Amino acid sequence: MNTGDEPDDNVGQNAAAIPGGPPKIFMGLTYVQGISPKLKALLSKDVMNVSVVFKYANKISRLHTRLKAADPIQLQSGVVYRVNCKDCPTCYVGHTISYLKVRMARHSRDCRDEHEEGTMLSQHAIEMGHEFDFENVKIEDREQKRGRREFKEKLHIMLNENSCNKRTDVNGISSVYAGILADIKVART
Ligand SMILES: [Zn+2]
Image (cartoon, rainbow, N blue to C red; front, side, top):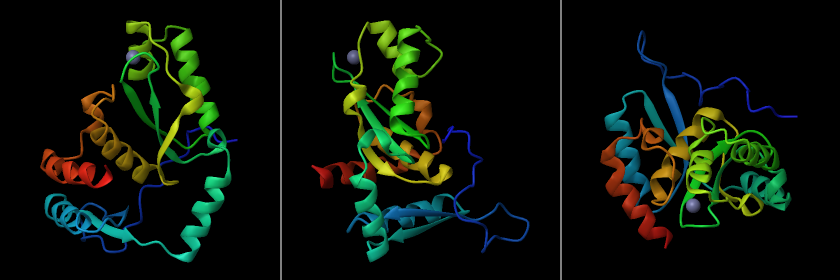
């Protein structure tokens, strides 16, 4: 079973590393027309060791997505997820390599045990006396590789204005992306 403690296999390796410089990081993002080229330009300019590689739907990934999607949500792993609060518009965005049901059970336990150190989710639940809707957790994105999954989690925290995640969770994503993310929000609605 997955424990969530897998070593960080860190996004694509450093085939094109600058000698002596930081390893080159390749970031696979799903291509969104009109938005992706702007995002790529900004990422490449701002973060010297990041190369953005766009993924286009192809037969294999479509097949993979279809198979994954056929699994019950609670048995999916390697995902960025969103859990909504049942008592207010707040949501929590997280990522896990474990089965979602295992991650949800841990969140639920943190709330029951008043384990405020747990996450912003348990902190919200305990401070406000609210309950989260673990049964209806939503999948926001899929990614097996930890580094990429964390990056996608940050993007989804920024896309969900009602998330109770600490804003420090999005450190590493420059505020210059705010405009682009706003465009993405418009495109999604
Ligand atoms: Zn709430």
